[in-house]
Length: 232
Image 1 (cartoon, helix red, strand yellow):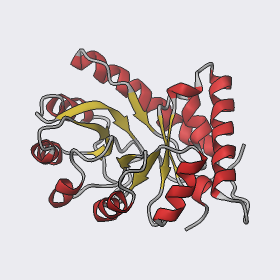
Image 2 (cartoon, helix red, strand yellow):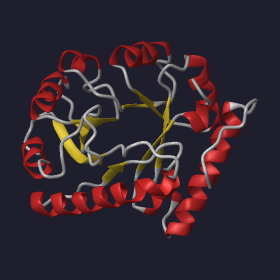
Image 3 (cartoon, helix red, strand yellow):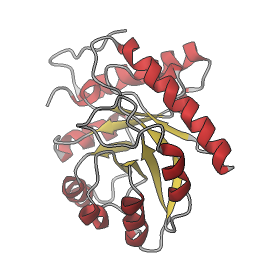
Image 4 (cartoon, helix red, strand yellow):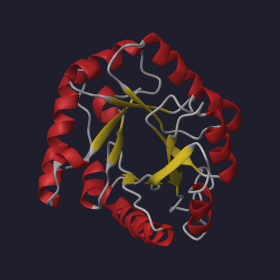
C-alpha cells in the first residue's frame, strides 16, 4: 500500500488506520503485532494533538528536539505516555533527555553516549546506535564499517544500555527502495549481537511511507508522524 494522507481525517481515525496496516503487515510477515512498537512522531505538533492520539490508543511518542520534548513532557506530565528521542542529540542538550525517555534512537558517537550516561542521574538509559547506510552527508549515524568498533565501545558505557540499531534510508517514492537498507540493518544487528555476545533486540526503522516494508524486514520500532498527525 502506498503512503497517502486523506485531508479532513481525524488523528484518531489515522491512528486506527495505521494500527490496522501494522497488524496486516505483521500477519503477512508471520509476526505478532505485539512485537512492533508504533512511535507517533509528534515533533512540531501541539500537546492537544498528542492528547488526541493518546486517547485513541497511542502510548509512545517521538520528538526530534530536546527542548521541545522537555516542554511537552512538562505540559503533559501525568499522562500515560512514553517519550522517545529520535533526532540528532547535541551533547550539551543531553541533560534534557537522559534518564527521562524510554529510548534514545540516534546515538552515533562514544562521546555522546558517555555524556548521556553521565546525565542519566543514576538510571540506565536505553540507547540505539544510529547507522547511516545510505552514505548521506546530511544525516548522522556511523557507517556499517565503523559500527562494530563503535558498538563495542557503547556496550561498555556506564549509565546506558545499547539495545539495538536505528537507520533512516534515503528518501524515495517507492517504499520498496528502502528494503535493501532495512535488510542490511537487520543483518548488521545480528553480526553485532554475535560479536558482543548479547542480544540487541531493537531495530528502529520504517516511517510513514515505508513502515510495512520495515515490518517485513524485522522492525521492532516504527517512527510514524505524517500518517498519524497529518502534514505539518
